[in-house]
Length: 276
Image: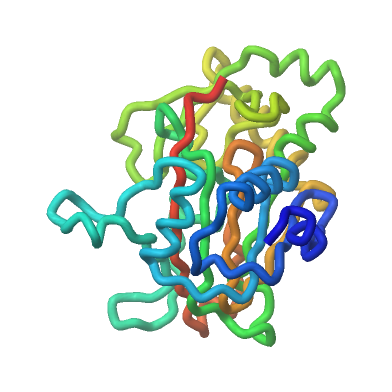
């Protein structure tokens, strides 16, 4: 499919971000030109949705590899073929029943993926295998907050106060691990656009008293997650969504649908670079 045809079949989803590209079958290999067009769409819209896909875990991994090195599945004990597959994420307990797990590390909190790595991932791909039905309500949706737009909307005085600050991260699921710090205002390595960079795994702003740091981060989160900066994706069976972790916070929306219905997703994570 030519680039012009692909763009004609696309639909902008919200002012905060999001582009839906229809009539594209990702189960087949794509040309380098088409991959380049998708990459451009990701950079421009931060979230790209491909509806009505039918993907094996292996094929999802292969598609993700068009955009960089992909996190392998499983440990070294897995044979190579089975390590090159998408990860399974679900709301199921050990008996296969829907459940909601509440914890400080749960993805119901605003976060960016793996900021506690020295080089956090650039992109995440999530594919809907089973999702709550529309009548179940909003539980199971994913909200995305545009941190570049939020930063640009700050007063100039606030931008000056944030310049040069670094934020420390540690995984909320294991506070014993060492902290990693990154710029609170990071620069996108491909577009040069500045955006806020923090979220649930942020522990404090380096060099500030803990109380002051907590207030700054809480105020920034309140500002950055205002509705004008947020796109809500209501999942449909077969949706594949790619998003840019360097620009976005995201969270899973709690609701009755998650308690009553199965939600099974396949995830792929593309490696990134050290934030600056």
